[in-house]
Length: 227
Ligand SMILES: *Cc1c(COP(=O)(O)O)cnc(C)c1O
Image (cartoon, rainbow, N blue to C red; front, top):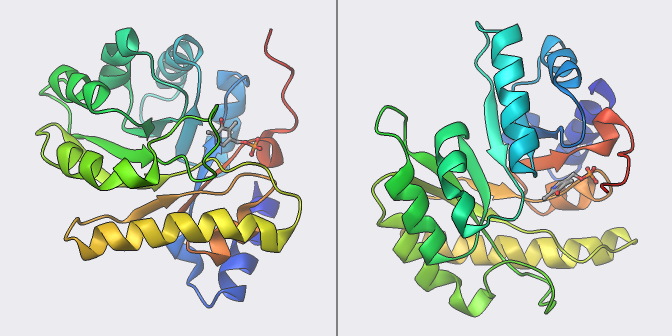
């Protein structure tokens, strides 16, 4: 955890950015509540999860073990349209919104006792047919639709680019996402979150302007393959 924080600060410094301008989302998928509690002891408060049932069990277990601590839970997995309610009820953020229909359901199902659900739109930045995310050409329309929903708060963009080994290569997709983000800001949307960068490419993402990196294995170790 401290090593990841140091790498993030070094990348921010390299880009002439303040280290506080980049938040760390600890991706705890496949790791248990004990790993979350341990990270929490080290000062971590933002956690990301991909698998809904696993996440909810963990959120409940962590809340029971540490009732005084307010953590933020971010959903970063694919969203099935029949699973929006538990997401709206249990999470603070969703990074993987890519369709208006899902956005409407999340807004309708967000409990009125909770603050609006923070959302990032996932963009298919590498243009791969198999990857999820809204196409860049359709982003502006989706952003306007989502921004108008009462119980969602549109915060920014997220991408999961095609893996690239080289630093300069990694920067290309991140730069493209940043440009889309800046265009939406120029349109008048009050966005403040660029969710990009993981264990293997967070330096390139931070150099290109990430405000939140989603880091799993560099914090928790390698994951066992999902069956
Ligand atoms: C698993 C995952 C991460 C973290 O990946 P690492 O390579 O372990 O850092 C980040 N974002 C998403 C969407 C993920 O599914």
